[in-house]
Image: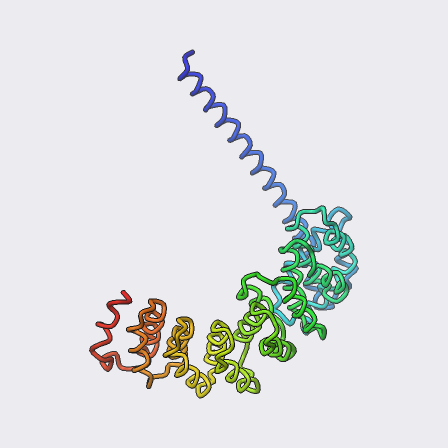
Length: 344
């Protein structure tokens, strides 16, 4: 047998081995899926009656064998995930918590075991956050300081989902633990809090000139996710007009005011920013004109379209298109398409 024949034989053997491995994995996964399905079918027979309180929880607990307890917790977790945030008002959710309570000890032990895979520990944190947020509150708070970012972020998400009176403490700790992470991502987590409870704390952080810029950016980005808090508009306006503040922060203030539809305050900042030296301020001025559909600001948009900074020109063109959607397309000036040439 020559060299070529040996190579062909080797490839053939490798293909056979890989095929055998794939078949074995497929059979194992099918067996696992079948086991899962049989367990869920057994529990599903009793769950509706228990959740409606027509049946006693003991009825379904008797269907959970010793080696199935963690599977049962996972099953309840997925059921709880189908219920919207602010779940505590939902009687079905409270009953799911009652059903899970006897089986959560091993789940809590996983969170404490630093030797386990961070993904498994994060999943355990999420499970406790869904099924026992107050019974394991101390453990969830400790997880905020976990060395694993995945575990810590999951703990923050779990804590944010509930109207806890200590929410301001969690916000402060989040500013400390996640310093340097993407501000928009951290803000998206914090935005899950009840705005009525957290807005004063975030505004205080935003207005604190001694606070790190990262923390202030997270605060303002979080505020953008929430409905307008009109009582804070004057303070944000003053912050936006303060030229001693970082340009990034001032630009984000305008973004929030435009999101809140605070037209007079936004328009004032737009006029200030449209001719500013900082590119980010000019760009946000154009962006806010489009966001607010300010149909009387064509001159500012023309100024933006001819801006030397490409980002500013693109924002101006986008704003014009947004305004145009509410106007007669034939009404736009002839210079519009010509001015787009440097952008395109």
